[in-house]
Length: 193
Image 1 (cartoon, rainbow, N blue to C red):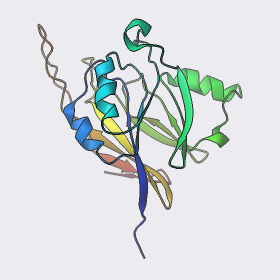
Image 2 (image 1 turned 90 degrees about the vertical axis):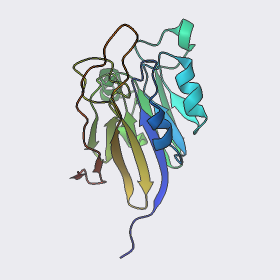
Image 3 (image 1 turned 60 degrees about the vertical axis):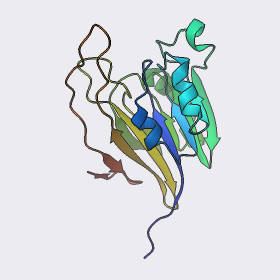
């Protein structure tokens, strides 16, 4: 039996809070697209990511228009056959789905940020993904993470990648953070660690 073929991959991150770990750029080399689920807070983050791949970005609750410009709150798009919708706050996205303003039948992937907790859940054949926070700005956050979604001949799968703790800011100390294990979740939702 032949192993499944990776057709395309999409880098997914959220909550960079003005800081982009250089490791993210290395992890995303070769992705065909990047999705940023908001709380960018510094346009330089987007400029760095755009050098790796085209990017879809939405505004987070901390993205001020005078700094970030007029970012959309939500984007629905298709990239390399992966139909996705992205927004910053999961509550808003789920409310729009429940009210029929968005249909899960139109998507393969639903992405959000805001919670700073990496998660991947399959609901009715749709992958619901929070990549976690790429910067872990709050002391109680788990370690920073990003995700890569792969489209294969058998469907979508996602891998989470831990990042190094964010360096201390001037005048402050870096917190000690746990680093989550890299884990992969396949099409049926099984988790490999």
